[in-house]
Image (cartoon, rainbow, N blue to C red):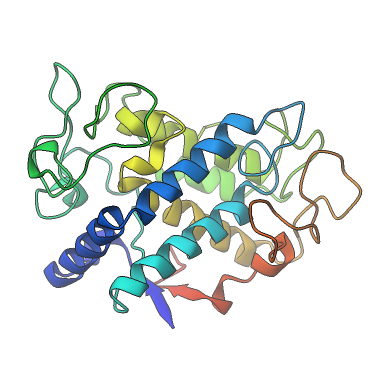
Amino acid sequence: MTVRKNQADLTADEKRRFVGAVLALKRDGRYDEFVRTHNGFIMSDTDTGERTGHRSPSFLPWHRRFLLDFERALQSVDPSVALPYWDWSTDRTIRASLWAPDFLGGTGRASDGRVTDGPFAAATGDWPISVRVDGRTFLRRSLGAGVRELPTRAEVESVLSMTAYDAVPYNSASDGFRNHLEGWRGVNLHNRVHVWVGGQMGTGVSPNDPVFWLHHAYIDKLWAQWQRRHPDAGYVPAGGTPDVVDLDETMKPWNDVRPADLLDHTRFYTFDTLDR
């Protein structure tokens, strides 16, 4: 069984293996397919039309499947690799271990946001940005520039305490756990982290930055924590809702998975802990 660990607890060998598998997917072209898929959905998901990956109840199961596909791709390169998660409510500064040169590298330079250290820096030649929103072909970050503070543990707790998964109109105006976690309302958790990292993470091609996977692995963990706290508060809507994915409705782009199939993460992996 795959065990997803806090990135702060990874050994040097686990970091090396994760980075190596990510770079291998980049070399064979599979990595860019994930970027392309994510960008396609973030561009097409709207508040007033069809919405699957974002601004909708299926934000969480959609990304759970997306992460599962990516993790399985990594494991096809190195079976020992699991997706780590970044607890940004604890590791809140640009000096956190994930930004070190032996893992993801740090922030970008002031002039253009170019990341200059670590395995994904442009100078290595191993990380060209091919699926992009502009002409820049290098990984960019501006840690803490777009928004100064990452979410706090108290803010996380305030969202975990919500008792309803989602509510009409099932978009970015909704009340409930999903939308407050996604960040369109309230204390803004998920969206704020994208903006804090900056660079490609602030765009639809956010998976170009490998920190995307660690961020979303933590979002997925928070969903699992919420489910454990509120076992009687299930996924909604259950059926017959236009433009959103109901509990037993197939999710695009896949033809073999429904939200109902993804509610129990323990079918696929566990976390090192669900206490925090």
